[in-house]
Length: 244
Image (cartoon, rainbow, N blue to C red; front, side, top):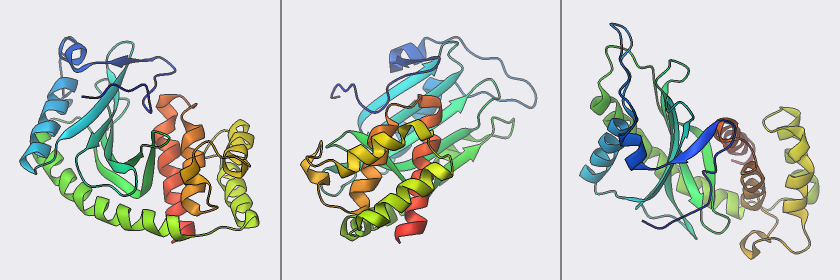
């Protein structure tokens, strides 16, 4: 597996963690109504179900809270991407009742190594209850994921073909920050990223919706991991509703 220091940087009481470290975490005792799923059990079950569909994990990154109860992760998958991208999954869960088990569909952009999430991307959101059938829930989520990923590829081609005037781009930037999807302190950074005379990445030199979306996701890498996934998901939804 290729090493990376990319998208899943850890901030705000989270630390990067390996599979081996996940497996070494102490077991969490449940109750009659609360059925915690060990992080390593979740990852291995997900990997197994992906394998049954002929999909492998090309790269994975995980971050856990200091007490090991919360887990965030991304997985790059061997599905065909478009123009320097690949299919990705985002996941998060908590064994202290603070978060449901959630899977999110996305696209990793290799050129700036970030994650772009599309609009309706929540494939699974399930509380850790006594009736949780992990394999069944994950299998149904992956059905949704494969269907959504095909839609996502088409959507990204639409973004790439959507030219923006400077005025249109400024309105989108304003509206996203006006909705407080990202902290307003990042507004100048997004603007600089998009309007730079010499873009950081040549691939995003065209003034398109795709370039602007990647300006947001590039700057979002500076956000704490605990809020970044929600922000990029909401930004993706905004673009889906505004550009399409």
